Image 1 (cartoon, helix red, strand yellow):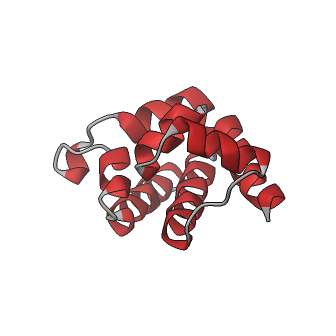
Image 2 (cartoon, helix red, strand yellow; image 1 turned 120 degrees about the vertical axis):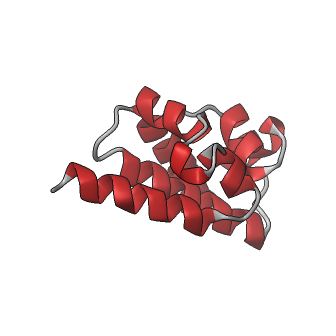
Image 3 (cartoon, one colour; image 1 turned 45 degrees about the vertical axis):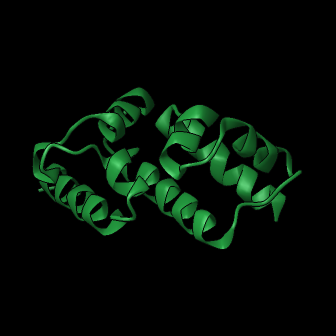
Length: 112
């Protein structure tokens, strides 16, 4: 299991240019905790793991049309279509569906 979590964190780092601090901020945990997950010394709680998986999915979707640094910037920037909130804020609040909807709209616009 630790390998799976580490792979998700690696994907988020590679495709979203996010450090453990960024992931911790989005998930509402500490960077040290994310580091322990990455090393296989601890495991996220089920609810946190679900959000981690959603974050990895969103970052993967963004990687189809954004470079890693652009994807990171998008996640942490206020978005007009999210009422001025950043995707990171909404993910932290459990409003992942709103973020996924916006990513789908972006994908549709890019691939028209």
